[in-house]
Image (cartoon, rainbow, N blue to C red; front, side, top):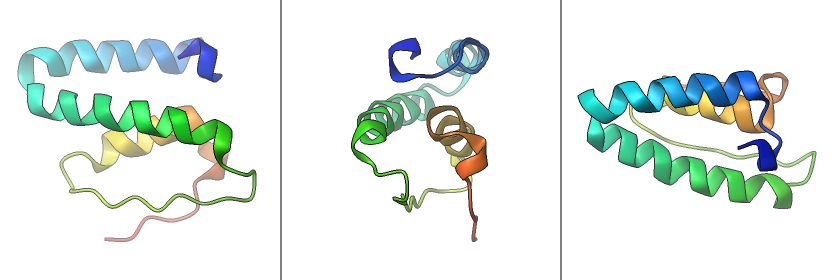
Length: 82
């Protein structure tokens, strides 16, 4: 994650979450890993004025929000709708 510009504190948080999910919710862990790989690939190609619209279920939404904050910066969050 450091290579993608993710700070060490955010990376450490994700390591802790991933470790916890590995033993409690392996399917959610697989989904979050899948999404993290794709979002990390989007960061260098997204313009500073670009947007990403992501639809996910309520089980993963808070994890995805934290993941996107770590990758794109929490200051870039604009809106969440249910």
